[in-house]
Image (cartoon, rainbow, N blue to C red; front, side, top):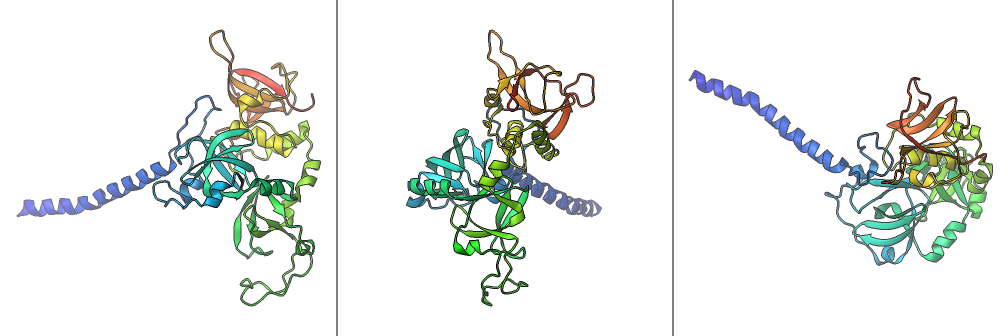
Length: 378
């Protein structure tokens, strides 16, 4: 009798442990399926961080979402514009495929193939990659030409939002991040945006907001899909004015780079949220008005070749790392950093950080240099 009681007591005590083990295993398996990242090419820049649960893993799982109906309209339009703050371009039409790069809102893509809810696209500086159908606004050739000629706003702060009305209490339509581009609304209503707005109906008023909203401090814009939205005017500039004000000097490049210290590394990242090494230096130069190719192996062909000599380096010079060419193998470029003066570089490796290139100093970055290029001040 005593032994039976002991066995029953042991089983009762064991049940919670078994349930927890099974439940945890199921949860971890699901996360692993959602978050696994396949690194397809070892020739890309160095990978210094583990995988990251990114937005498109969380929002849409390939195993659990229904495939949307692909309309004739979508498949017949050859062009598309990125309609979210950013989107990933992947090597294959698969959420577990590696992120090759990111495209920002307003980027025009050429759609060349469809596979379920995936679209194969050509982007500036990147060809034959896949992105999700949901992040795109499709256009005909004529619509694309009209879009490219239209006046636009550019986001000049790291993080902002698109709002349904000129009021911070209104619905947020979407994220709006640095270097995102969106069409300006040049209508008569937008020209009078600083004046008192129309008297709103009770059914349309925002809870807590007054009728006759003052639109000063806001600008109106139109998303690529045609939705009217509002943005705080302090967060944007007219694109043509912003381009005219961009100047690439040693000082502006260093200032632009330092503001991102601490930003996490992510393979394929080139937004203010995550950077890989070439995405980081490319973004810094973009802020100063210079467009660079996307990858380090292409960036090394830009500008003028400079000898790797501490006495001759200038802030803004790009230093490339990897393996030098031999008689049996070509040169390999695996990493890029930007020189900021006083024997230091800034680069994205685990996160955006400052390292020394002076032997024997703290934070010395000891990798083989395969080239140095001067982009500005040649």
